[in-house]
Image (tube, rainbow, N blue to C red; front, side, top):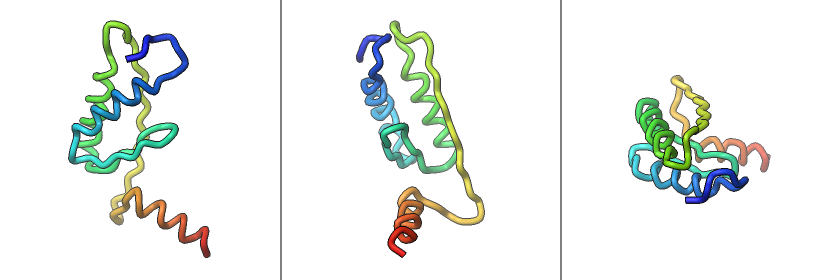
Length: 92
């Protein structure tokens, strides 16, 4: 784990991704600026809590976690489906 205070956080992101992979009921997609989660809301919130808590250590006393929820209840959507929808419009 990198020491706190430097500008790079990739070591912390790797640790978060390892924690995310333990939650097999939630799909994830790492992006350059965050991680997208797909699954049931209760499962996602449990995962977020687990990742948030996993960041604390002797060197890390403060953790800042941002969560945005985009939920539709009128139809099932997936990460891949959203990308394909945009790509189909680009090729039209």
